[in-house]
Length: 298
Ligand code: GRG
Image 1 (spheres, rainbow, N blue to C red):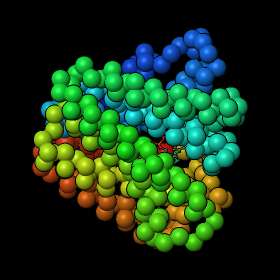
Image 2 (cartoon, rainbow, N blue to C red; image 1 turned 90 degrees about the vertical axis):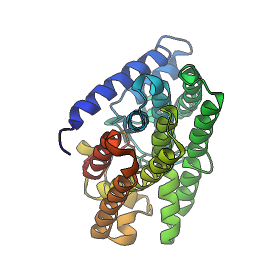
Image 3 (tube, rainbow, N blue to C red; image 1 turned 30 degrees about the vertical axis):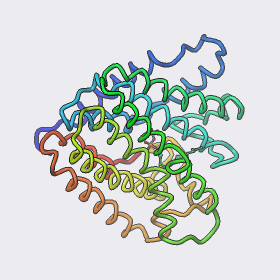
């Protein structure tokens, strides 16, 4: 994209998110210390911070600012990190590595890993409440809480995870696979973009555009994740590649083949960028982020 410096944009916003998270998390010595250590262990293990950056980009696309949405951005990262901790548990995906280090339950034991996830999910809603100061209209706060709760709950991410787990080892339809991907992964990514845009003062038309773009981008993200699980490496991914196949998970490449999966991801990213057309140049960072989702290797 002409003139847009993505590495600088990402570095700047990641640093702002990390500073805000550092301030928001109870210190490692704050009792009960183990759970706070575990929350920090997973949160500060070097994730891409894609969801908080989408919150910020969503706000900026409609004339809002980073300052207006930073606590909400941090909330999305807390919810995402909780989902990774719980997803890695023996009762779920039983993974040993995440973000390049042993998973939470490997480092702290299962009970503390579960509680660290619970703590992060709960903290997220506290952060959203803290963000009320920058939104004078209480309905805007209500809408953002509802958006994020729906995306994270049983009609969103948790629901997608349930169907994913119940589908392991089974032949499932392309529709069920699409349900899993849109709910487990795309819902939270879309909610990030939409809640940023809401907080940034989007008009209904702008919200609709961002919602459509977020849905396409979110699904593309999961398809790319499936592709990386086939052709990525532990060093690139920070987790063990090939785990989908070992766990007999339904994936896009397994259903549609690698080549068709790559085409689908590319088409979704094009659709995502096309949906952003009504937002004009303000949405340039989201367009570049969409390309990043397609080209990422980790
Ligand atoms: C609700 C208990 C419960 C679990 C939710 C959604 C979920 C389960 C877990 C995530 C499972 C998973 C690994 C999905 C693949 C897509 C994904 C979310 C990848 C990780 O996200 P990245 O690449 O990670 O943004 P970083 O570490 O960069 O933040």
